[in-house]
Each structure stands twice: as structure tokens, then as C-alpha cells.
Amino acid sequence: MTSPHYQHGGTTMTVHTSTDLRTTFLFPGQGGFDGEALRQAKEKYPQVRRVFERIDAETMNLFSRRITDLVLGDRSTDLRELLDDDAWASQVAIYAAGLAAYEILDAQGVRPDVLAGHSLGEITALVAAGAFSVEDGVRIVAQRVAVIQRQKGIEGRMVALSAGADRARRLLDLLDDPMLAVATENHDEQTVVSGPGEVLDRVIAIAGQLGIGAIEIDAPFPFHTPALAPAVPEFAAYVGKLDQHPLQRLVYSPILQRYYEPDDALADRLAEHFVTPVRFAAAVRHLQAAGVTTFVEAGGRAALSKLVARLTKGSEVRALPSLAIDGDGGLALDATLRILRDAGLAGAAGAPGLAELLAPTVPADVFDAYWTEHGDEVLRRIADDLGAFTPEPAAQTPAPATAPAVTAPAAAPAAGAPDRAEIHAELRTLYAEALEYPEEVFEDGVQLEAELGVDSVKQVELLARASKLYGLPTREAGFRLDNYNTMDKIVDFVVSQLSGREAVAAG
Image (cartoon, rainbow, N blue to C red):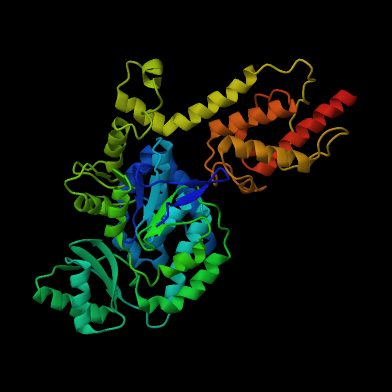
């Protein structure tokens, strides 16, 4: 196999897996939801609310319901309740929890070298890597459910057997039913099989006679089985109509047993998941051999981190949960972040030296809790206020007292000023070089923070560079960065400022 590569900053990056990989984020699939852990995380980490707000908008469009109301309402909701609801509910909840965990970890400075997902979690991994927008990820998850529901006779379950894959296949061979299949190979003593309910009852009975443990897992359908073959072309056609973007992070597929490549048609690859088993154990061993020593589960419960611990027992590998409840009833993510900081794999709590500088008498855990909740707001306020102290260029005439509203049409450029197309091209280049993104991602309506992950502090810095490039006057105290969150709004801002400056100079 050749070394994997991916797009970053418009350049194809090659990863030499024997030395370059250290940290992997794992996104869970079926069963990967813990309502109480998610509620605790929401109280401490603002990223949960932000992710769910974006997903709410799409579930309202698709189902006239907010996923937040289902999982973060007045009381804690467990996965069983979600499975008893509409089929999409559990799947979107698992997807949302995985993205929320990813955003929290990212905000805390944890930078994975590679992402991997277990079944449904592979969709979450691809969204986290930038291949699809958060909203398109919801559409993909929902369509995954819908196409299965439209297949006649596709009713069944998934059962975990306490046996390796080879032994599980021999057991299935005894029944010789084409609808039975090995769905996931989790470790040497756990294999999940899919099939019709009545046939799985016979599997459980035979397993009991052979001394093999069997337990039904929480899943609405029998995934990863040849019985789903009729759903493949319809699903591929739907996903193929969505915008696919270059991967910004390396993604390894336990289903494909390889890294995703830049030229992969993701619609076709995701459709193959319907009928192809998940070889999770082989994926973990591959990543460990590639140098990974830290596996962080980005999602609910701690099933994958426990599997990794079992698969790598006796090694120096760390397997860490996130949105799970620990033995003391607390959020496992808090301990995970402490471990990652101690290992140099996450930013310091809050920010380097801030606690000592701003609150030397406040306990560290109190400052950490405050900074988690309000840190983004504090940094944004500082960045905005610093604009008032930026010296105005000597030759500049002050801008008009009131800046144009962002919803107004861009003013026509004055004579001698660059036109809008030129400004757009120059700003795309400026932003692309600063962020190491391909220029083509900076389309007019792209959301800088929500879609590209450009935080407010970086946005202020980039806007300052743009102002310097065009010699714009100092922004007024009432300037709100939130009003300029897309490339087209920034271009319109620059055009209007240049037009206003030229008009004043001409008068």
C-alpha cells in the first residue's frame, strides 16, 4: 500500500505512517450516545450548544423537529428512548454527539493526526475532516435511514457474539441463510452479526448451546449486510448530489481498510458501507503499527475506547473516552483533557499563564470552568477592542460616521478603486495563504467559523490584514464581527469602505 495523502492548504500532503501519526479520534456508530454525559458537557462546553443549533436547523427542515428537544430537553434521554422514537432520531443524535465531542476537543487544542469512524461514525469523521458540511452530514445520516426504510422486507436486528469473526462465520454457516452476515469485527472475542429477527433468534439459541455469549445491540436496522444491496444505488445517487470538499484531515476507514484518497468519490464509498463489514480490530492494529499511541473516542459512551484498550493491552497505547460518565458520576471528558494536557497533546487549561496572571488566588478548576464557558467571548472582546488602538494611517481621511448595513447592496467602487471581482480574488488569496486552505473553499456564502472553523480571533486578525492591504480606516467601536461572517460580506465591507473613502476624498 502506498503512503496515504490528503489535501491541506491546496497542497497534497503525504503521510509516512511509520513515524508521523500519534493521535487518532474515533467516532462511534450504533450505541454511541450517552444522554447524561451530553447534558453535563452542554453545561461546561459551549461547543455542544453551537453544534446542536446547526443540526437543529436541518432537522427542522427535514422532520419539523429539533434534535435538541429530543436529547437535551427537561430530562435526560437514553438511547433506548431514541430508538423507540422515529428511526432518524437515534442516528442523528449519535452523529451530533460525535461532532460536539470533536469541537470540544478541537477548542481545547487537541489536534488529531488521523480520524476514524465505526460504521455510522465514519460519516461523522468525514464531516469533521471537512469533506461535507455539518448540515449535509445530517442529510446523509437521514437519507441512510430513509433508503433502508423504503426497502421491502428489510427488518432485523444486530447481535454481538462473544466470538472471533472466523468462529462467528462458522456459526452462521450452520444456518445457511443469505440474509445473515458478519457486520463488524470488533476484537478477537467480539463479532456483531446482522440478519432478520427470527433467524437471529436461532443464532442466539445455537450460540448458547456452544457457550458463546450473545446480546442484542441498540440499532434500528441490520446494517452491513448483503440484504441492503438494493439501497446502495439510491443512496449513492443522493449523496453524489451534495458538495464534496477536499479533506482537511487524514481519515482511515475500518470498512475500506485504507485511508481515504483525494480522488475518492465519497458517495460511492459511503454507499458501499451498506453491504461491507466493519473491521474495527484490524483498523486499530493498523493505526497502532503506524505509530498511533493515543486513541480518543469522540462521541457518546466509551465502547470504542474499551475495545481499543482490549486490543492494545500490554502496550503503551492510551484509550480515552469523552462523552461518557465515569465511575464517580462525572464527565469522563474532563479527565481525558487533563491526561492529554499532561502528555502535551492539548493546550493548557484556559490559556498559557492566564490563570496566574488574571486570577492567581482562584483555584485552577474554577478558572478552567470559567474559561471554558466564557473564554471565546473574552478573546473576541479583546480582539475587537484592540481595533480602537490601531493607529490610523496618516494620509487617511476618516470613514463616514455610520458603516453601511451588511444587508445593503455593495456600493459601487469609485473611480480608481479596484472593482468587486478584483477585491474578492485578492481576499481569497489572502485568506487562503493565511489559513493554508485551497482558494476555492472561499466561496461567497461560506461560513468562516461554522463551515471552515476559523475562530473569531483569527477572523479579526485576517480582517486587520485586509484593512492594511487596502488602507482602510480604523473600524468604529460599534463594529460587530458577527455581521461579517462570510466571504461575500467581507468583500462588501471592503468595497463599501473604499467607496466611502474615495467619495470623501473626492468631495
